[in-house]
Image: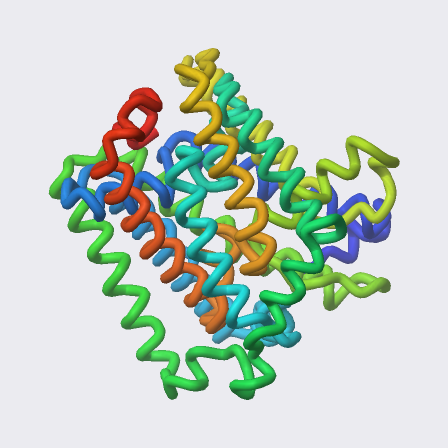
Length: 362
C-alpha cells in the first residue's frame, strides 16, 4: 500500500487516526449487522444449541486467520513485527487473564467489542458496563491494580519458553496453516447453512473478520513509509478503551495514533448500521442484582483483558491469526471459563433472580 501521496498532504498522526477510524467504522458496522459475539457463540456451544452465533464467530475468526497468513506469505505484513511476537509476553497473564475475561464476558453479557457495539445502538447497560471495563483496564495499566497485574504477569513468560510463535513450535508449514484455517471456515459455512443464516449476516461476519488483516496491513504500510516508528497492530479494544478514557480526562490530541480512531470508529459504524436498519433501541437494566452482575463482569474483563494483553478480539482473533502462543492461551481460557461460568449460572438458583439477561444470547 503506497501512502506517499497521502503522507505528503497529511501528517503521520492524522493518517494513522483516519486509518483507525476507517477500520473501526467497518468493524462496528459489520459486527453490528452480523451480531458478532464470542459470548453468544460460547453459550451456544455450552448449551449444545448451535444457532447463528457460533458460525458467525467461526467465519470471522477463520477469515481473519486465512487473510492474515496470506498477506504474510506475500510479504505485505511481517507478523514478527507485531507486539505479540516482537517482545516478551506473559504466559501466566494470558491464561489467568483469559479465564477472568471469559467469566466476566458471560456476566456482563458481552465482550469488550460487543459492549461497544451495543452501546452505540442505545443499550445503556452496555454503555455503563463498557465504562467500568475501561476504568478497570486503565487502573490495571497505570493505576492501583498495576502491582497485582505485574506480579501475575511475571509468574511465567515467553522468555522461559524461548518465544511466542506457536506455528514455529508446532513446525507448521504454510500449507498446514491454510488447511487449519480453511477447515474452520468450512465448518462455519456448514453451521451457517444448517441454521439458515442469511447471506448478508454471513457476509458481514466474514467482513468483520477481514478488518483484522486490514488493520495489520495498514499499520505495516505506515511502519515502512512513516518517519516516526509505528507499531504494527490489528484490532483490539482493551488498551484502546483505556486510552480513550484518559483522552476524555486530559488532552485528546496528545499521542494520536491508529488506536485513537479505532474505538470512536467502531461506535460510529455500529450507530450508522443500526440507524440505517432501524435497530436503534434504548435499553436499561432489568433490576438491581442484574446491574451488579453486569458491572462485576465488566470489572473482571477490564483486569483480565489487560492482564492477558488482549480481549476476545485483540487476543482471540488478532493474536490467534498470527499464531501467538499467549493469544491462543487467552482464547482457550476465555472459552473454558465462559462455558463453566454459564454452567454455574444455570445450576445456582440465586442467579435466576438476576433477570432474564442470563437466558439471552444478546
